[in-house]
Length: 322
Image (tube, rainbow, N blue to C red; front, side):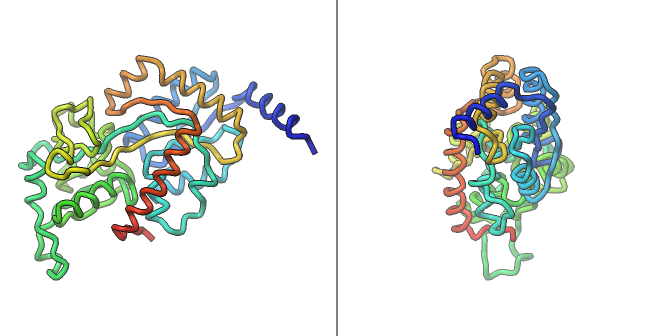
């Protein structure tokens, strides 16, 4: 059996030659959403940075749990990574029988961006403010038959996603009858909002940005604590009568928990170098992201803290998807 020093030297040697073959980044949502756009932009740059192919593969389902489980069970060698957003920290409180442990089975590599969610309606909608949207829904009345209470349907990026939680928080804060319509990602949700099949959507600002710029959607509010640099004229939910309302969304890379620390450090250094570049920061801001970078330890602390925070919040709301 090797001594600890020998093991550390072996791990460092592996990291020094990493990577020797293509890396796969699993995205837990379908193409077209903000997480997918970010992963593809980052994957292309990481390929140039590391000199190896980087394959971005969509593995949607169960609000990201299918893709997360696949990476949790992958070989811990740095060649299979997971691009996640805050839904990863929400899921443990919503899905009580997860087949993996988000705190134990994966480890943080780097936090790369934050992005608010945005409440949007089709450009042809008569709704122009959040107040008008809420007024179109009736007051919640648990004693009344559902059909007797006018409801405002909102499309989200899936059960247990930050957008689902944002809508539930607004429902509770406003007392209005909001009906959740979950989709398998922000892209499919936007398709039905754009066609008018659903009256309102709560999606990532990054996924909505091209349609807002093209005049096909109208933004009513952002869920972040302050206005988005991409849409500074759009007020926050908090500004519109709901002080204290805030839900930002982070994005980052994870790896299987037993991945050697030197490999994690190599990946972190490569992505950090990418995120320092002004052209990358500019492009991500145009997509609605606020670029950042972090140590693995800082990102892990954020994930663990949010798992605890969101578990308390979802329990108080009675949000469960299984």
